[in-house]
Image (cartoon, rainbow, N blue to C red; front, side, top):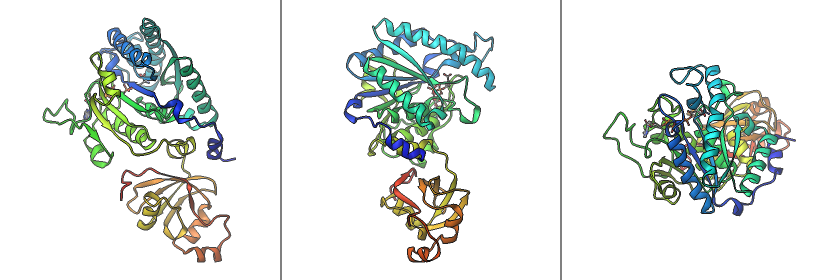
Length: 388
Ligand SMILES: Nc1ncnc2c1ncn2[C@@H]1O[C@H](COP(=O)(O)OP(=O)(O)O)[C@@H](O)[C@H]1O
Ligand SMILES: N[C@@H](CCC(=O)OP(=O)(O)O)C(=O)O
């Protein structure tokens, strides 16, 4: 059975039970100091704000960074280390400190917490992510707040999230959150990095994350933060594609978090008109490993991205990679921009033989189970320019 078929058969969560689920991501810069070490006052503040939401009836999940920043000083490093093994050692010291601090801070509001450490590969492994999802559901049912971080000590460099922005987007999609709030040290997305450009203006609402939005988002401004605004925008794109609206901004005073969740926060709101994606499509779009690439013409691009139709051989311009029926492939336009991903019904050599041909011609030349190169049910659009 294909991995994506298995995902389809996994228990899909009913939407109503998760409607009030909120995922909150707190970055290192909001929890620690530039010199390293946890800022207990900030942890106490966030625990208090999250507990208020919890007691109001929301199902709260916290995605937290800060393990490396919390641990590097105890390891004897004078600044945030750069080498992977140094960061991993710092994280293993810091993660324990971080959880201990959260445990104590939440306990003073009578709220229980749990630690969950995930890696990118856990998301692409159906059993692991299913188990993680079941664990989260059980914790939420028992009104325990899951506190999630990347499992820093086991990840290899190429597979690392690095910052937790993307992790928070994938978690938000997994639990089909009502909102993802990415909290940071700046009150939203500006037209330029406000640390270096005092004339930069804040954007209150973003309807579509296109190239212009990527262009204005820069790197990190602090010595403990990693991803900067760029990685938050990428995370917001994945979350909104998965039907989860996103808030990026600052929570510094009492009531700020509630305002952020209720639409009146100090930050930028990224809205979405997408529906929550079923697990199968999440896997296809965000966790699968494409085995090849198909370039399509403008007509096919429109049919796939806007028309909701299947891809036929007539629209195929070029084929690269070594793939078989059932594999996932990436589809790009003639400018090499990604349009989306799908499960292909042809082997690469079959498709090369019939690229650009009409359905009638294809049927004369080769025998395939399905005429569609990619059926629309096995497809997800990922392009930045969806509205063509
Ligand atoms: N266009 C922009 N608007 C706002 N902030 C930006 C922009 N470009 C870059 N940044 C920087 O992104 C930083 C937040 O990211 P980061 O330091 O990684 O924080 P965190 O640790 O919370 O993830 C801001 O402090 C700011 O310096
Ligand atoms: N997993 C790492 C996250 C690293 C990090 O700094 O992330 P972020 O502050 O979200 O840019 C940690 O806990 O230190």
